[in-house]
Image (tube, rainbow, N blue to C red; front, side, top):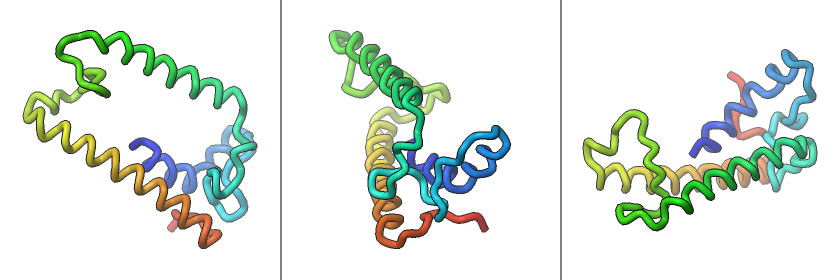
Amino acid sequence: MLAAAGWPLSELFDKKLAAALHWTPLVDEANRAPALLNGGLGKVSPAYWAAVILMASAVDAYGLTKVNDKDYTPGNLNFDPLGLKKINPQWMETAEIKNGRLAMIAITGFAVQEFVSGNAAFTAL
């Protein structure tokens, strides 16, 4: 779900942040974010990919420690800093699943739109 927010933010702010930090921007000339269909994934540092794999592995390993708990449901890592699940647990679980699915459709739409049009999905106004 964070990727659905990160994609437009990267296209809008990557060049500005890269210039401020004296880095090479990751977006291409058309301001398209690096993606499998757009190319540009080779510009991303191998250290970043290693950190992503390490972080995902750590979260997955934590989840595996919870599998034998009697009240465990798959994907539930008890991360609810605002306490929203206490209000209506069944509705919250359904909403989270639907939001996750919608985010996956959105990311796929961003990638296909940029591949077909050759333009960034989001441009500065």
